[in-house]
Image (tube, rainbow, N blue to C red; front, side, top):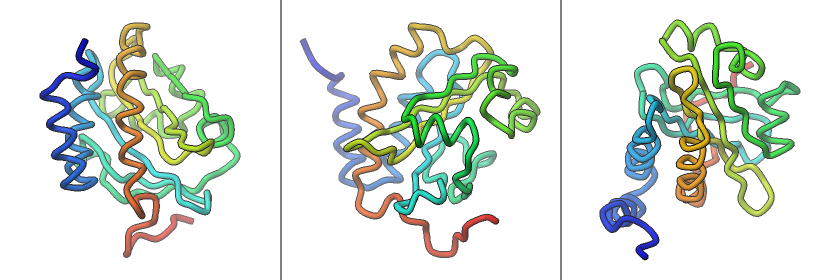
Length: 172
């Protein structure tokens, strides 16, 4: 048994040596290869836990790197950061239960969203957010995603990856 496809292993090895930007490209390709997933975005939690910020994406036109959101007392932050549990909206209604920006995502053609916390040493260091069409998060798709999440955790081991980039300020 080969634990990981040799081509994927080689791509990951090269990307890890090159740095986070290259790793986001490989991870984006892996996550969007799951049937029905159209966009993958990677979000870091600031060390002080006051904000999250986008650090990588497969769709920079709609989800530019650097976006910063305050951590608040709401369903998304409570589930992801406090409870360290994913949120899965497999329909527009399901998305609306945890995403205040659901209408904007629907306007872009997305009707399903899931966000998976990346927990390292007991704390949520980041999030993998995936967008697609309603019904995409089937048991088989979730199993594929679950198998990729430990690989995505590699992103959050880069020194300083969770720090806010110079020139990016916290939104108020």
